[in-house]
Image (cartoon, rainbow, N blue to C red; front, side, top):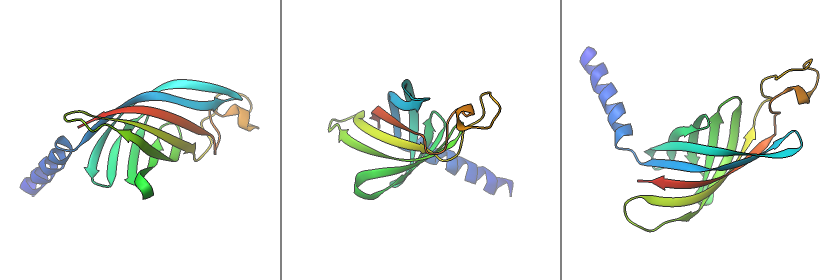
Length: 141
């Protein structure tokens, strides 16, 4: 049984080792109590197969291929998010592939409390339905 476990572990690690890798860097814009807040965004994504990616972009992120070249995104950081992204430009060069994409992610639940008495939505870091827009420059191979 130990041999089967070792083979399964090596096969799993090898599948990630030879997977396509995409590194993203960009800006994220979101509502911050009535003001527009901007922050940097950095991520790394591994292709599991042609239709699925797993990675990190401010938290754990899973991407599933959607219609018309879109990607459904399920993320988890302080709160779980559900969103969609679209890559609207891809470089045609050899070696490192470049891309520009836009993603919209919606918070699915209220975020953690940051103070106050807990009676209203203003006491939360984020509220269900809040969304952020991210514009990314990607490098992949």
